[in-house]
Amino acid sequence: MAKKNKAIKAPKLTFTVNHALVTLYTILMFTLFPLFLTNYYQSARRDKFWLFVVLTGVVGVAISIILLGQTLGKNSSKGKLEAYKDPFKLNLTDIGILAFLGVTVISAIGATIAAENPGEAIGKLFLGSYGRNMGLLMILAMTVCYFVVSRYFYYTKYVIYFMFIGMTIMSFVAIVNFYHIDILGIFAKYQSNQNVQVNFTSTIGNKNYLSAMITVALPFSVGLAIATEDRIMRIIAYVSTGLQFMGLLVATSDGGFLGCFAAFAIMLVILSRDMKKLSKFFFCLCLMMVSAKLLWLFDLVMKGNNKGYTSFSEIFVYNNFVFILIPVFAGLAILCSLLKDKGIEKFAFIGSFALVSIGALAIIAMFIYYSAINTESTLGTFTRFFRFDEKWGTHRGYFWIKSFELMGDFNFFEVMFGSGPDTFYNVFAVYFDELLTRFGDSSTNAAHNVYINYLVTVGLTGIASYLLFVGSAIFNSVKNSKTNPLALMCVGVIVAYATQDIVNIANPVNTPWFIMFIALSESVRLKANSTERLTEIGF
Image (tube, rainbow, N blue to C red):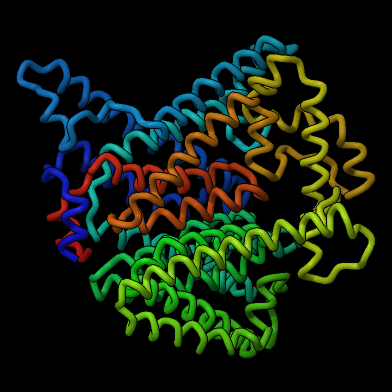
């Protein structure tokens, strides 16, 4: 363990006012933010949008004033600003999000000029009123959030405890809500609204939003359980792992499973070089299977009075094969704890890498086969995911295909900078009649794929800069996860969320947590945490 600590040794960090501000900000973002509602579900998205913007704006302005004062002060020096040498030096991740912000500004300007009513348009583009509040203001807040957290996050176990408070309440409420137990008295306000009764939950709102939040919370819990040497914190992480998996099951959204499966695949490969960590990983998988069966027992007690499990959720809760997986994962955990030979670790790495690669290739092959070769045969509950057409993924295929058709009619500026931030509703309106006739939806304000949505709204330059930001963050988190526990805790989160974005929507409820974890991971690159403090908190 000493050798690993030496690998991440950094200058001793003094706790400053900026660190205090970001610590408070981080605590509020992981406790108050997911639970904050002012009028039940009536304005859940806007509530979290304004909370995020206000909190980020306050901490951003405060830190800017302090930095300006330090810079202009006669006795200030660059060494006193931070523990690392140059806090203003940019890497690819920094450049990616700054470029994304810059492109969004250009896109908003272009859309304003082209609008029939520029005065009205600029306000809507700024607030994201055409779509889901992912306009220029939100992108600016995301950028500020990333920079203040990546530069000033001060790692203590108490912050981690606060993270679990918000995650635990969020998931527990979702579980009991799924069985029609209205402990917060929210659903009593929507007795005549069947859509809210079925598709909304917890303090988040839409169940797809909850799934995206769990896609962050579950890999984080697994990562902490593996990374920490603090017994109490590990127990809390194990309990949270089981609870978050239950939350994922009751969210009944396939996007969450897609993201978490991707996270576990990359974590398997990373951890295969360390048998002790790999043992904890398999134990976490065992706990998830146990939690699925605990949910099954609860389902028996409640006599099946739930909102209805679907697809993957139904498999884990009701299928008996999970009873086989429990001893299999437990056995693998015990076996890995007994194996310490370096040759075994090398073999495990090669084997896990081959397994994940073969799995990925098999999925690609099945997509090609059922989408391009065998397009007529009837598919089952599972295989239906591998036939891509306009009906795929609750007609997400239609949105994606038509989005590329739309871009074929764009002028050069629109191809490069898009139709304007969060304006998918505007450009897709030409398909609304067909959408209603074929699928029963009168409109949509998102492509249900974050990357395609950005491609349409902020163009090629926008999606390129966003991919640079996310891709660089994933590379850095994977690279640093071998030696730094904070990066190990974040790597699964970033991979999971970036993957589920393929079938989901960027929104103010979910995206802030994603940005927070990218920033936490990037704080490792900036050596924001000393070896001494990592040891003190149990790593």
